[in-house]
Image (cartoon, rainbow, N blue to C red; front, side):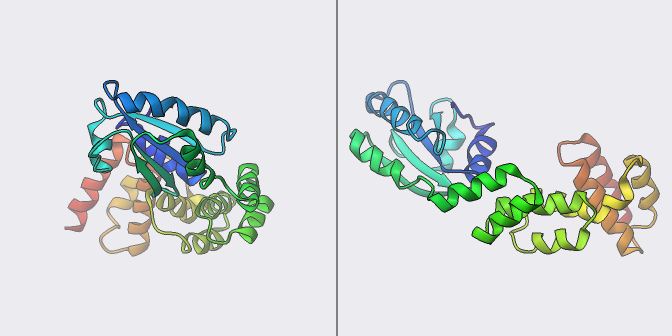
Length: 233
């Protein structure tokens, strides 16, 4: 797949939490890129989807190039769980590319964990965590399932096992508010809470949770955050 500055986080960083992603930084004018590209495509296609190839045109996507501090191309990086785990620069022969990709392939246990996560019910996610207790994808998926089921304490306890992120904050907000927001008008509830946020910690937490559920992409979130700041300060 072709990846751009705008889609890199979703298509590479987030996807790498499900399985390894190989990022190929290339340009149309680069001769060695034209040699390496088809080799990468052939070797990675043979993994049957266990490894994903993300191609980045460095001329069109300077932000990604800057993130990797690219000095020359082709430059290839392997990403797992949002982090660079391997890489090389220059056009390697096919047997070397094969060795590079083979090191990224999941073990039998990792494949089983991925399959259990894909099923996604409580029993499967618990089984995945039996095999791989620190697996963040399984932890957050189970936490969200429990949050939606109203099992707040269990969901929040699970989230304590992983680093905080925008995703975990949203799940935590869902866990804390699941019993109280069904069928309500969120905007009306935010306005009702606004006069309480300065003195009432529980009201302030509920207000913040509702903003998490609206999400940063909702234009109302910015407005309500400004109103919160005005009330607090």
